[in-house]
Image 1: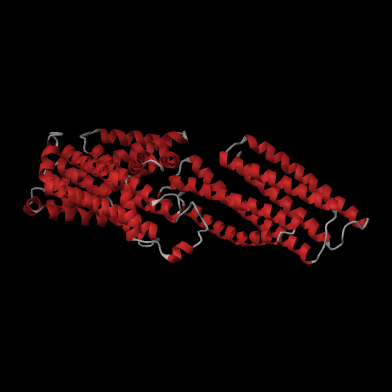
Image 2: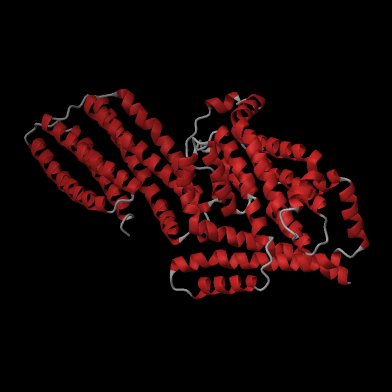
Length: 535
């Protein structure tokens, strides 16, 4: 009965440990995750910086599998090349060891201190940033509670003949230990949890160092499964990234296997504590493998690209969205940043649509009109994709600023989509002018041209303000909006005078007035977008 209770305590401790890692990861991402995209932008052309990004990102996410899924999303979103992804993978392997290093220390009693500090910061602080910073403390405390439970249960389980025989067998057959680590990690989809369990066993001295190292080597292989499963439903680039990770991890294990006993003897000199030895073995192994693989990033990328060629249908496939992919939701703060890039891209497409509509109307450019019609459909698709993407970002996992940004973007895309609709209307009016062979008077043409100029100017300032998050530009946007309202009223009155004087063709009446109205509505949408910067 005691053994059964200990087994329950072991797996209960593992569940608490995994939950603690989740809380810790979520808290760390809220505090520092917003800087990851900036760091990624700066690391794209340097393998060492790519490795550093991989290390930091994995430490924040506390899961190499989740980072792999996120990288597949970035590849699908054309934010990463295979070569860059491989550089990040090498750093990712080092990042997986950080949690193991933290939990290998003996901090009895302090786990409760972390829990208490985190609890009071999260639930009693009135400061939003302090509440946010309390979550990592709380998660860290939960992690150690789980470790303590697993270690206590492990000391009882280690006394059973079955467990002792299993450890003895794995010590004699190292490959069996590797297999156990790979299968168990694949089953729970967390190498961090597997490493934590092995270190907990080490704390209760119920496992030998060679067996622990073998299991951890297997965990490195098992950690590839999550990325592989995600890649199977994706295109060639995602499959390439997954196979590159599998190649790196299996190659590392194969390199170390013949030297596992000398390696464990070396690691044993790093500390007198078995748990620390296991954590150090994990770290040293991953650092050596990453350094060995670093010079081969380019050749490996070329080899994988030849092994998995791009399909013909993928080459011809037109990507409507550029920066977003559903897998990026694994990192909510990065998802918000990339969604903002997609919103801006959508904005500039609609800006160009308005420019082309002007060409169609004033210069009778049929190709420009066709361009507007084509991109109006694209804008609708981008809008629907963005709406779905934004709805799926978990707002509770974001810091307050990004929560506000998420809500703002949901409103912005509606305004931007409507700008596309108005540009489409203007292109339709341009075609009607041409089909009916109706000419606008010279004064009318000047007025339409002035309206286009003012509206495009206002919309451009709005998009630039959105990019830079510059509240000072909002005043200029609001001033231009008022000027455009005045111009619309003035030009309508001028048009009525021209009709009375029979200077303007009667058939141009509705089209001219509706063109002014649509242009003024574009300015209204610029105003709506600008308001999100100050409220």
